[in-house]
Length: 342
Image 1 (cartoon, rainbow, N blue to C red):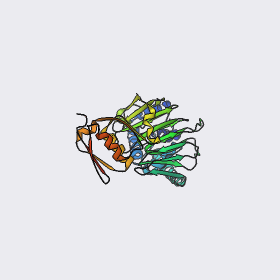
Image 2 (tube, rainbow, N blue to C red):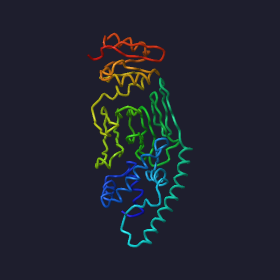
Image 3 (tube, rainbow, N blue to C red):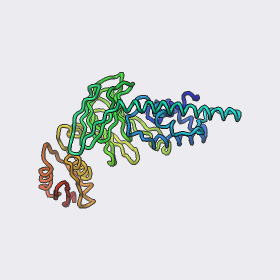
Image 4 (tube, rainbow, N blue to C red):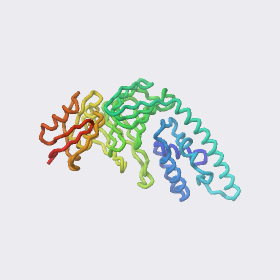
């Protein structure tokens, strides 16, 4: 590894864009010296604390470095790529590094301004859902309380969007320009397929469910240094989904009925052994109310039911007929009680 390739390689590594060989190169470089490891930890920290989730992701992974890392490093943050034999060489390298950082900072600012002028944002409030058509013809159903950021045109080597919340994607096939969804905890890559993604802030899991085609799920490298192991890509096929634990970043793959997981886009509420804690959050977003469970033990009670087009009162009346639940609805506040799953 030489001076010219190190920074872009680290940027690709942090942005989950590195190949298996590149990851191995970075890990070998980290093992070379404590100085390399300390530098990487500083770069990694700057990347994590940067406001990377408020703007569109970069179509070029190396822009992660240029935009979010280089402007935050000092001239003493120089990588150790080979021994320096004299003091003046060391000083020369630090000066050169400072110049590079300055140039990259200016370039990064330019790229940032350019990305903002090309940005589109679609956001749905609670109680509302919408259908979008992206510049490439792909269609996106955006669920309640969700946000999608995307460019006016897909000009780069990737078609990149950023999702917070839940959406169903029907992606136009284009093998020359893969489609990438950036989440806070992972990236999802496809060439052309249909699938559902649920990634609401505050929820303990992220779910990606495939209806047609194949999807690559790539966990982020958060805490990868502490775990000392790479984040593996999972390839999901129809009627399978990946569940990622937000706290631990652990992932698991399961067989599901994909149409049930995506039924919300057809105005259906489908619960299949769904914990009441998740049911409550879904009702809040679907109907725009605040839901409170009377007892903590109700949170884990499973619910299996399907609703289509019913009002909140009709849904709760049906649930109360089971004898397991009772409810009170005052204005926009719903309280659920009852014996639950006892």
